[in-house]
Image (cartoon, rainbow, N blue to C red; front, side):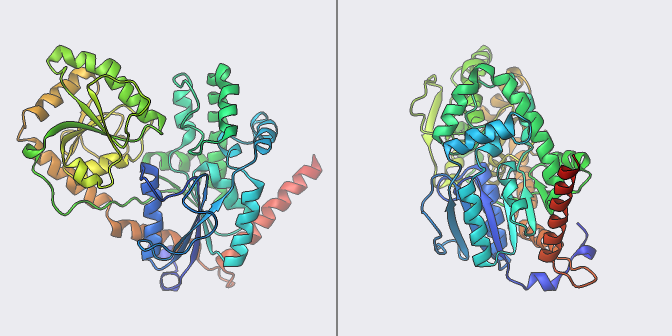
Length: 457
């Protein structure tokens, strides 16, 4: 984004009120997606803006709460998702006719729409940021300058997993509603058909969002390019920042060999550990590595049945300290490219990343330079032997990975990106009309055209 297109000081010195509409409360236990959204919040606050996080589902508080001690100028507003009857109506009028995805049906709520409209008016909100395609409709309805952060392209994910999933768990959002349970039961017999339809609907919706939002973001640069091409609109990358530890334990002094990072509330994490336990471990045994233990950080394992080679370490409040107990991190095959925050955490702590070659696509890492990649269990066995033998060459890879993480995921880089993104929204037109007025006029025109088209039919 060229600086020639930015207002500059007029926005940089103005305090904005930014409403972030999130699919869940950003507080509490951290996940990869939460880390991305927290970067957004922290960057905006450090730029001097006020942030309100409106979230769906269970959370710490009801209603708006004041700034917390560690997050000045941030407030949280809980909004309510749709009633069960609303979900069922939207399934018939939206999903079945191809107008709305299942993901959106579970987050489209009259109560939320009314609450957000009241809040925007009362608090004089300047900018709206929406989380994923699931909340994108609110960005358009509120009529303010709108940034859509799509995260990953869900259409690509659904297309690839249509034949692989055994349930909808983890695919339709993070809240555990009665409506979701009923929906999952209803569609299970025709799951592949449902997922293929969902993929096709979301693909259209992603393009529509990119064309209607004032600015669209995707976590992966590769996916941003794909969506930009499909929508004929520029799509940018979502800034991510992470802070590493002040001190790093020496590689040879770390007591454990292999770690996996991720909670089982996210189904791909469960699938990855299950695949390692049931398939990969058996083949590693052929190379004398049947005693390898995979320590799972972020999950306590309650209610799951795995072999004794899988050891659950629970949620780590001090993640950097926990990661420095390990020499290497296992990153298995994934459904699609994107930024894996677990890889960044590993790199910042000089944990050697042993990644399936699909897992680092689009991340700008170089195999053999700052990451070690594998495709087969035999490849992984070779890498694990290097780790077990304290191969001195691994130190260079760890140093390079740390440099990569610091360069690409520093706080200043994220703040600079958000400064540019906000400035691009507030370019003033030659006649002096502000960004809000331009957006409202454009959307009124769009709605008028839709009505005219309807009457013509």
